Image (tube, rainbow, N blue to C red; front, side, top):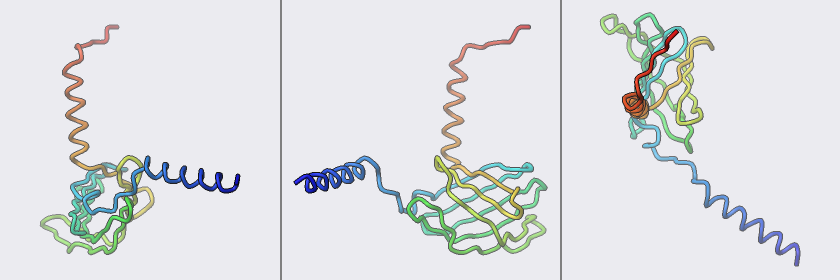
Length: 152
């Protein structure tokens, strides 16, 4: 009888835990949108991905030239997975250099880590809309704060 109750309690606990924790989101809309961020050596990174599995990645490594690639991607239970990299064609007019190899990995708090070239080339991308919301909130708080000065 104890074995039966122990087994019953185990299944109830497992069921309650799954009810409290939402299942990972596998929808394409979870990652879609514009992402941007900065990184080492003054780099700026931009990614625009659409719910249909297409995307564009541009990296300014700090010199003003863009490394560029188109991507095919999918959401594998809240893990960003690149299925195919299509380097952009070189363009001296747009200062675009083909980007053939890079790595994207999901990080904590809905950010994406982008690495390319050497291991020191890293950008942390966040959704542009989320960054704009944070900036608007900060500006609102700063307006409400009494002006302060530092007297020496």
